[in-house]
Length: 296
Image (tube, rainbow, N blue to C red; front, top):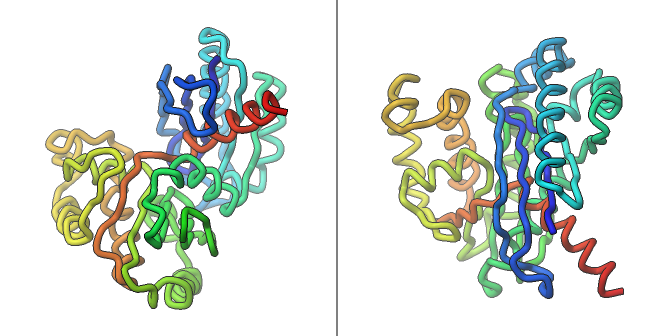
């Protein structure tokens, strides 16, 4: 049995196909069957013009067509496609979604920031130590989601229009940053012994550069040091010395500074890097729905 997830983000578009290794567990271990990431960067258009341009629209349609073929080849049983910040903001999103559905048969759900955060957390919440309180931060190309977690349960959450592609395009509003800082002050700054959880492709890559194993903890000071080191490198050094993809190389230091800005306003000293993202959360959610139906 195989499950497929399509994650249409502001920077990249991803396909994950996976199968559960235990058929009698709600939170099974997953075997990755196929993973493909394409740097389409919808946010380049949307955060500047409020629309997805013709070229990006054509690239997205081709990407979903390719994903549809892979889903057929791998004989995937259940699939869901979710789009996030760029699609939320694009005035012509509905038109493009209808066209993609017509050409591929795949229906794209444009989900809210809070729904995005819940899906991501569902993939890793069971891995967190139950006695600790965590601040979960997911930094994407267009939005950043914050959630305070206690006893493996989300207490309060908020999504902000702050992301790496928005920052690169100078499209982050000062009032949005002020709202984020106010949220952190009210909900997380006062929590003693607070620990961090970081998700998103950039914090995952920073964790890899720091040799942090999956589920391990990255020291906050190490995050600061690596971000400072990367910021000093030019694009060539990031691609060939750090072996980053070009689109990742352009924004990884921006992401690092967003994490640092938030975490430094709290008592966080280390950050868990579970290496899970929206695609993993979609897969887990599909499995749980199937599992519960079978039980019923």
